[in-house]
Length: 300
Image 1 (cartoon, rainbow, N blue to C red):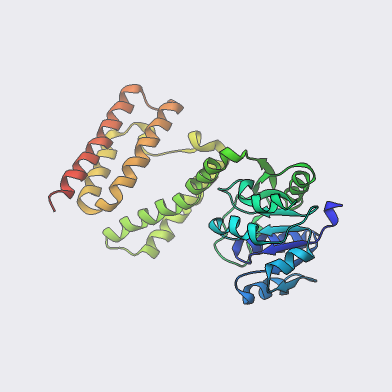
Image 2: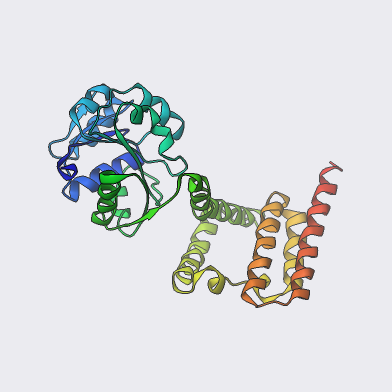
């Protein structure tokens, strides 16, 4: 039975560690781990009762029935093509951007292939398993493997979403926008405090409650109803003052403010908080400052 197969992990980084520890604590038999770093493999194995660290991934494949490839995206196809797969096994990668086609090397040797991507951020090697509960898991697979992966997502306290192969780049882009780009926006916002003579530490301390409040609004109302600010009110005068200040004192943040602002104009118009005329005024204002930025850059 698939449920009784020994599980192995190739890769002991943040995602691999979170999944391996999470599955083991959920009652799955995580029996083996291998990694480019022997120390990382041994450290992960030590956290899981009955788990063994292998020096060679090929030996791990020989010992396990379901193998997770928790390696960088660019290495997945190469690693999969090098290993001695056999019929009855499963090769599963943990990439959000790639489809199961990256595992064609395993498929050609008779293994079932699939994808299991936790839609979550793991900033460190410790404690990642606690974030799995409540997370979505993007799954791809066929037959028994699809069912096994779906059950694993539910057992971990998450929920499965089935993403078509052609949609995985869009799915992953959405994840980057909702995670990495938020961090980028906050980092840029902290930079404005430096322009005021204050520290980034002070900025982050002041802005984090606002960020948390925004996330709470998203959870309660969704992005369209949860969004606030001058663009949502059609307050062109305030936006103009923002743009002038950015041009003079923080031009490096102008492009980010402008592009996010243009997207927010469309959001406000879709929500119905501004009229068509207000939307057009805001767009012209934001686009005019893009032209001004380019002209100023050419004067340097």
